[in-house]
Length: 259
Image 1 (cartoon, rainbow, N blue to C red):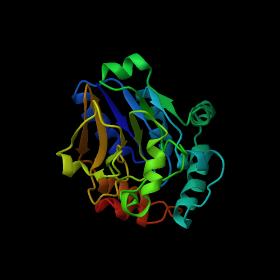
Image 2 (cartoon, rainbow, N blue to C red; image 1 turned 90 degrees about the vertical axis):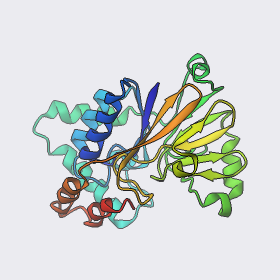
Image 3 (cartoon, rainbow, N blue to C red; image 1 turned 90 degrees about the horizontal axis):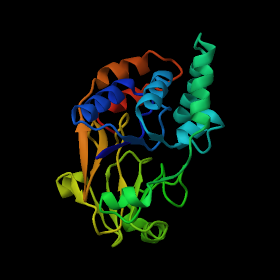
Image 4 (cartoon, helix red, strand yellow; image 1 turned 30 degrees about the vertical axis):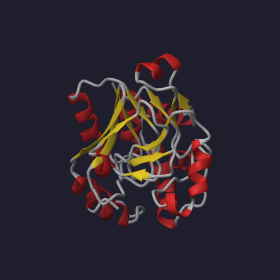
């Protein structure tokens, strides 16, 4: 059994609550699909916690933006990227600064479970990326794509043989080879992974966008995955955002409604 988290976005309160829930279930293997930083008020602390608790951590588009340069970001996301970069440099401990930048800079964009481990879970293959198997860092796969871009879904499914786990949109759910999308509510939070090819969005720890403010993640067990939601003190995170003039207030106030 292992857990998959994604899109923490510098939300320490959500990350702490989700990791506490994972530990309470006796799970000691965690894979993170990226976007540890961006948007939120605690980038350094989130990097430290993720680096200490996750076995694999991938590169997300906001991680990329902080390392290099934001591309096609809206104004608030771009400003948050530049603020995050400056915030990571404000630390008095130079060794800690170097360690955090080194950790970000070493992230891969794709991870594949070895064949034996995949078979242990009833799978032929398990692929992990932030965005999509076609463009691992920055392609969005939205639920509405089953209606508006069916060809995109079909082309995406051709890039892996059984299961692919993604984040990026902050909307959890399952895309199937028949070009359908199932929200966690549609499937009572559980999906059988033993046979059907599927692309699974694990949702967001720190900035959900499915109208549910709770942090989200996925548990993988033999033959099944489960979607999990965890309450956290979003008001505390919101107030931290509001106290940072460089961060758009909306990045904090949106947390209340999960949007």
